Amino acid sequence: MSIRKSGLTLLGLLISMPVLAEQGIDAKINQAIEPFANAVAGFIFSSFPVAGVAIPFVLVWLIAGATFFTFYFRFINFRAFRHGFQLVRGDYSDPTAAGEVTHFQALATALSGTVGLGNIAGVAVAVSLGGPGATFWMILAGLLGMSSKFVECTLGVKYRNEYPDGSVSGGPMYYLSKGLAARSDKLKSLGKILAVMFAVFCIGGSFGGGNMFQANQSFKQVVAVTGGDVSWLADKGWLFGLVIAALVGLVIIGGIQGIARVTSKIVPFMAVLYVTTGLFIIFSNASEIPAAFAAIWHGAFSPEGIAGGVVGVLFQGFKRAAFSNEAGVGSAAIAHSAVRTKRPVTEGFVALYEPFIDTVVVCTITALVIIVTGTWDPSVDPSQGVALTSTAFESSISWFPWILTLAVVLFAFSTMISWSYYGLKAWTYLFGESMATDIVYKIMFLFFVVVGSSMELGSVIDFSDAMIFAMAFPNMLGIYFLLPVVKKELNEYWAEYKAGTLQKFGDAANRT
Image (cartoon, rainbow, N blue to C red; front, side):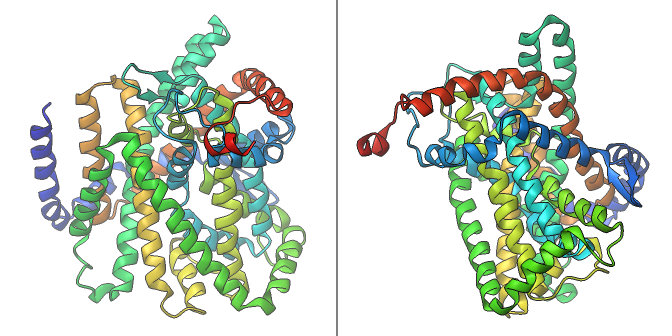
């Protein structure tokens, strides 16, 4: 398929969107897919009762794995924290190593896929439904999730494919198939099955949660601050989608290097913007800070009036952390696999910062703003998380909704370009590495940007959310078999690091 023909096909699809939206095709799509979507989502998010609280099995699967990895690697999430920063800074970055991006760029790309609307909307819902104590459990789950990221990102680099042109392909698809095959012949077939399952789930997740949901929610926030139902944009989701699709297309054409260049600039900017604003509000309510921390501690262990008591508040905190940083889902390993390094475990150390920044820093600041401003509401509608956060910030800064809108759009945009890469790598794993398969996937991805902006596709997005967390089942199962491989890589590298025999490069070498 030629690029010109692909472009004309995409243009035709995008132009047809307003007509399709007016015909109410979104309602028809919802009706058609709803039974199947509900069945799949019901299975993926199947739960069991604990103290009257329905706990999704996938949440237990993720948290149990993160806890086990933390003990198995002797609290690597704390031991390697300082060295991870040295790697992000470039102290040990070998410019001759295979790969396409730096440690910092790989981290920024992965962060852009996790730091998003969940940090803004999801935290507000967790604190409202679980009380201030949910913040404590959210932080704990974020710290444990660092260990999961360490394992999966180390494996991503260890078993990636490196091509003659310098490009690479990595992620769970590769370490599940190649890694398990290397462990034993008996695991070879299992590895292939798990890899295909993961790739299928990843593609589904990239079109929905990593694309349509982001476009849909960012459009709604833009409409909200420009007049709501009377906004000029209110019925022009397709136009908003076209603009976002064009911007996303300009970035993803450049592949992982283009994506990394953009995310390495957007992620620090939006993180500093959001965190600085949050800290300003927190310290503006300095007199409430001691009470806020007391409420967090007290609420974590002796909540009052919260459904399910301690279990209920623990569930809300763990749920938000696991669903926000996606530790154990395997998506981030795809971005981290593109790093320029000869030692796989180095990217595992860098990946420790992802759940820390996403959950321990950004999510906690959102929670503290909501607590110190007293805007958390136990009766909140889970779909109104962004509005609740906006209200909390607006209580101290009247014009904050405009800042929040910018943050939401940037978060959504960066999430879309990162998930386009995740989905593309899963797509090419299934259908082969070629220009044609690359173009087909990108056309579909950009088309769904417009779909998400202009249509109400509730069932489709529910199905996609289920796909994202379905990725955790094959990913985590395969990881258990590969833990000895990671431990061997870690022990060899850590012995050299402690002995001071690791080679430094650039400014770091000059400082020693």
